[in-house]
Length: 306
Ligand code: NAI
Ligand code: 2OP
Image 1 (tube, rainbow, N blue to C red):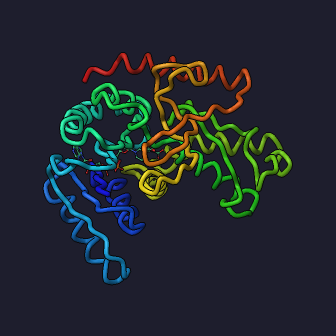
Image 2 (image 1 turned 90 degrees about the vertical axis):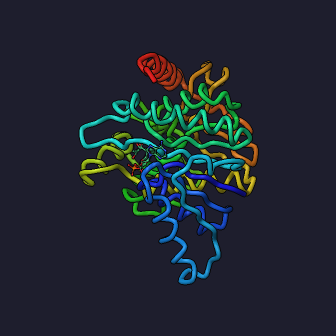
């Protein structure tokens, strides 16, 4: 497997390390900043004898090195600063993505592409339009990170292992995300058996704000430990044809009553990318929130000038 990661910043660098250490394939780390990807890949190589793992990581400043990749992760672009929303990054990151997409279409037309650059759902849709890739082969990572954050907060509150929590977050990877509190379970038992409704609502709110909370604590840059873990899980599901259900930003085609918009929904992920988008049994209020999110994204997309 050839796995290319475009953008060797905080998220891309750590993703390269996780994917290499998991033995998922030969990793190509690419960044426009001279020396950055090469420097990080040499550093990662130097760890091989300590870790007793023989992985291959190649650093490059040329996007042409993505040629004939099986999987491509796009993390190139600006990260938000304190006080910024993800949407504030739209135009600048669209410009960066535009050139990358044209190259990918030319050199790696058979790859499965995971978009990470924010604002995630808008950039995923933008990349689909620019590459003309099949929607099953190009999708975004966002709500699996939010789901993991929600599970973590629930586990901490109940003083249990996060492994036993099944959380659900769908919709926009942004302020409009939809934590599905009524579907969350602990080892199959509904969350409301363990926690008062107002506590659950509070944790859902903290999940929505978690990215901003981390941005404001870091002072510069945004989260990368959990994001890179979420990306590595998707790469593994594809590389190992795991057929795992993982929420991703997918281009809907009638599911949830919506079409031609990228939104976070659970999907079965395997070697061909999205094998199926799963439709949760949403209530009227939840469906309305998703429909409003789709409208918001469509309006925001119209403002992208790249
Ligand atoms: P960073 O600033 O550490 O790294 C971004 C890298 O992209 C820089 O090294 C830069 O040189 C590189 N880059 C810019 N233009 C490029 C091009 N044309 N070709 C190759 N490389 C290029 O930022 P970080 O923290 O790694 O975040 C990257 C992006 O991922 C941001 O847009 C951020 O908002 C987003 N993000 C999304 C998450 C999600 O859940 N979807 C989670 C975390 C970050
Ligand atoms: C996050 O949620 C920056 O989108 C990224 O942390």
